[in-house]
Length: 295
Image 1 (tube, one colour):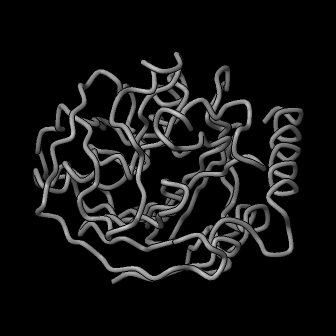
Image 2 (tube, one colour; image 1 turned 30 degrees about the vertical axis):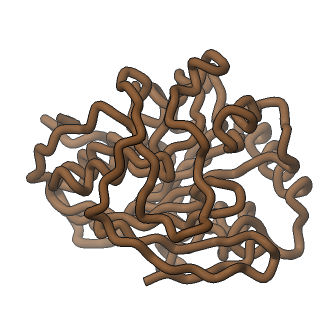
């Protein structure tokens, strides 16, 4: 199934300009810091342009704002994808108990399932080869899609990849991914996330517009909803993290889903949950269960 969205509603609240959105998020994160508040290692693989025609292909329509926004189903995860800006904006999937062991592909590939005319990145080459310090970072963690070889291959499509600062991708982002990976064996975990860009194309971190045709996110966010095995009650946690270095502990970036909706807009966050779940804001990141492994 595929749905088309207006960029204004899918990317930011209609009453707030992209510049004001960026300023609000930056100010909010600064306040968190003052208050004391992938998977990782992606660029060890090679690149080529091999395609996998086994995935589903959707048909899309043009959005009213001039940006073509589609909801693409990969039979294991979904991406809200901007065919005009060549980037995913949002992702969502549900993790069950980990029984998979499919090997991660050694290459990144173009996405053969995007509809005709839907633009994607112009190169599969490493970002590092163009400007140092950035990885081809996954939005949907490849290890989360290891239930079969076709699905994990789809997680390595460039449609699921954005420029991530290497230390971010291999450090704090991997920590957040690991929380989901570890809790999936206790109960199903709903995973949501997305990107936040700066006000205009050509911002100081947009190093890959010429080489790949893609902007670099200034923030990435992730939210998890699951069931507490001890009580049977639902629980939720979310993070909004700057795509930069020197970030410190993951706990500094904990937010509630309600706060994400306030800052980014409910239409951008796209999480259907009770008000009680959306209001949850743990003081610390969930402790990893004993014996957890991301293998």
